[in-house]
Length: 557
Ligand code: ATP
Ligand code: MG
Image (cartoon, rainbow, N blue to C red):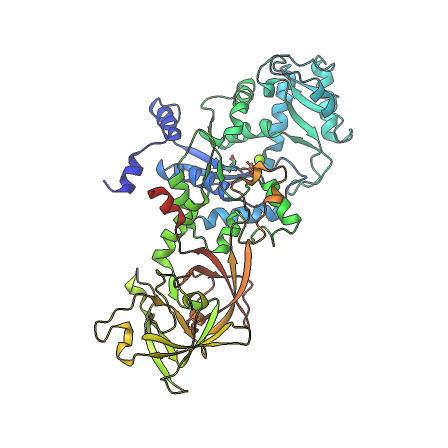
């Protein structure tokens, strides 16, 4: 069996639960949903959830909705709605229905009335602080609200007037009457509705009472016919409440089943929308799609592909316990994917001028470079070789250690696709800095082939000084210097001051053929992609990832 087949035959615990529901005939098809709150841009953690929910749709030939969990008018915005739709589609998924929890406000209101009539909900005049002070502890029951035993008539009247806008924000709530002694604090008369006098991004000023997450989520699942409502572990303690509402509302079976899995945490980054928003608002990054951000839009701009993110989600699988995934695994996935896809070019990011003294001044030779050694069908392109070239400063050392195989005074290297190059003279400025190398090529070594069996260990990249195209190259490193920035009192103190370095690179002229969105490899340096800030006058490249694979090394150790 191939690795892929083995993975396909292996079931995770969510699939086992789903199989059990199908086997006993409780549900006939699998219907999932991805339910973001439109209060920020999606991050790689959401991508995990998207791949999981839409992946189950694909696996079981079922359905999956995109539902905006838009029950809080203060933090939500249509800008976020747009970006979320774009990100889900970019990852390669299409929803069966596009839904909004706000579409169910009327139905949810009716259900609240139903609970009031059944004596299972009451209007409470306590402030949030008072409720909190009376909450008790897991072992000490909560103190009953003095409003707990209001009559059904009074509750109906007050709740209708809450809706009508008669009361100020925060002055009253509707609470479920459940169990003040429950060890599960979520069952101690949770709030169902709160008064918020704010405009909602979709319903405008129609409502001034808004349902809480717990009262909206399960019922929204029910309305849409969701069979398996997959969420992250922090909602495990909400599950009794999720089930209590479906039961108290006497909703016919089959009802949705909530299943929790461990949220994805990634090393060297933070992953809560609130914190990401803080980075954006505080100008610590250039925006939600700053290529250092763990957002889907940031990763996209950085040059990540949907395939690499899906591969990553697949590899981490679903866990029942929280852990932190090494960001090296994500980098491994993008290297895997780009090795197959990226167009190869030569670029020099830290140039050192080389003058080839045995070539005439106006020498020009056309060489042939391979576009992608992993895919012959992508063909070749032309490369101009001239008397003056740039090589990478790091590829020359005046006083090298023993195991240095690149250019040294008197030594020889192979210029990729070109010739053997010998360094005869090192030119320095008045401060002793190397400013130029005077070299010769062996005309017999064309194509980099040894003419007489003599060996040259190093092969280095180069560009023609005359024809190279200058470009702004943005070299990104990890946004945070510590592995788990969340452990610090203020995660912002953990920001890596060197997370972005901007250099001018010199790229072979073939770069003009590169299209926006096309992944490239600058040979020996890494994978790069054109940034959206590129203009007709100035190319801007983002480094997606270097070529060095630290993750694979760690694993094989
Ligand atoms: P954050 O805490 O980052 O603000 P959230 O959970 O509030 O995220 P939602 O918009 O409510 O964000 O999440 C939409 C869905 O994505 C939920 O089902 C949630 O459980 C899931 N999700 C959010 N973060 C992660 C994560 N890190 N790993 C896996 N799933 C996640
Ligand atoms: Mg949330």
